[in-house]
Length: 190
Image: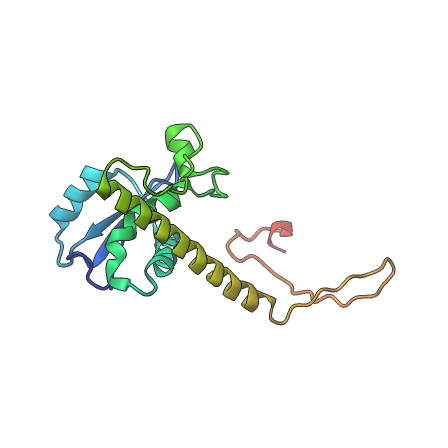
């Protein structure tokens, strides 16, 4: 359990309580008002979740909110539920599935693109259209972010192919693990 703080005010909220379940890796993102006290945090925690681990999830959530709210930073509260849905339905390498699959025993449902004028309710129509606009915007922002990451990753790298028998230089760095107990046989520490 941890907090993401320093956010611009959105609907009266300035921070997010992030709680991650250790088993499923499922996360809950709960908007919080500043100047909270321990009793309000405990009540919110008990009302929403039970256990957590959060440092990596906080960084992931912050990056995700940057993509969602890049130009509309004060609207992050409106997107927090979509951030939680995205996180919990994404594949996690550590458990080799999504948290949704761990919690519910099945693959997460796909979000289909909404076909306009098929809802029976005007408010539902507006929300589904807004959802599709946000999803399209996020995909575009994520593609830009991936492009930037690729650009920086590729700097200084080049494709090289070698033939059998070619000579190459290797840079070897001796490494000695210092956390192991010293013994006469130090094979594990070299």
